[in-house]
Image 1 (cartoon, one colour):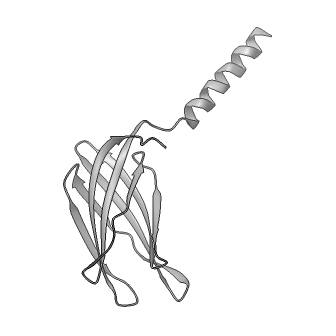
Image 2: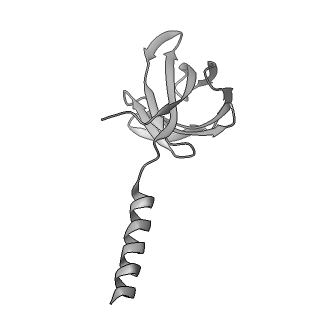
Image 3: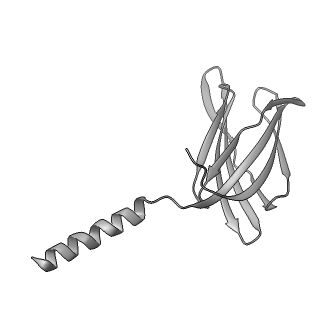
Length: 129
């Protein structure tokens, strides 16, 4: 009986550790321009190495995976554009940038629009809800 209780307690503790979200992560603040005009300034907080996503006005969707590497961040993007209600993959760029330093990338969508994405990555505590 005691052995069973210890086993159950150990399994419960292991499950709780897996379910607990990390307290630190990376905030990726973005500025998105379309054809030279500001479009949006979204930000996302993710634990290092995990993916999140944002969608912008049924035009495109970004899957974002920031990973901490010493004093740098490796930010991988998957870009999906939407045209006539159909989503298609537009590319998978990445930015390796120093924490606290702004970096940018640009692309042209299948509908001819030019986009620029500037990112500023900071290491932060998990935001409160």
